Structures are given as C-alpha cells and as structure tokens.
Length: 128
Image (cartoon, rainbow, N blue to C red):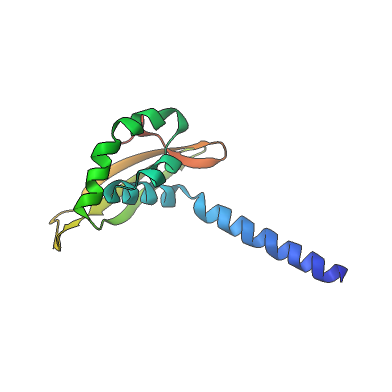
C-alpha cells in the first residue's frame, strides 16, 4: 500500500511539473499572446500581460474585441527567441485570413517577455 501511494505521488509530481513547464515557456506565452490579440480574446490577454500594464490593456479592450468580430483565424509562428535570464524577446510572424482570404505577407511582431511572480508574461511597453 505504501509503495502504491509513493508511485501515485511521484506520478502526480511529474504531471504537475510537465504541465507547469509547458505553460511557462516564453515561446508559448508569446504565441498565445499574439493569437489572443488577433482573436479578440481579452480575458486570455489579461492572464498573459504584466500586472502593472493591465490598465493599458483595459484602455484598448474595445479595439481588441473588434478583432473578434472579424474572425481573423491567425496563423502564428515564433521565428526566434532570445532568452536572457528573466527576460526574453520573441520575433513572431502572424498571417490572418479575412472571410477566407489570407493575407499575402506575414506581419512581424517583437514580443518582450519578463518573469513576474514565477511565470512568463508580456511587457507591452517594450513590445511592438
């Protein structure tokens, strides 16, 4: 019985650590941020942005939600990531399709990320 409990605890720790690592990857956070922006998903954006910049995000909420109405179907690719301790910069390409017509060229974006409260978040002031 004790062996079973130990095995279950070890498996639980492995699952939790794998899940935390996957959701705390700066590359994945950058991708999720761009996808959420082009989908007009403000609630997701609130979880991905630096806390002190939530008011700035709130100020642009109406414009972001207009993307939702356009149903853009973003195709997001993280082209490169430079990680330096608790900061990272991701170069991201995004292509969108409006009513089935795909944009001819991918738009390039630079996303700056920092670690805040132990997780990667986007710093809007240094992103473009």
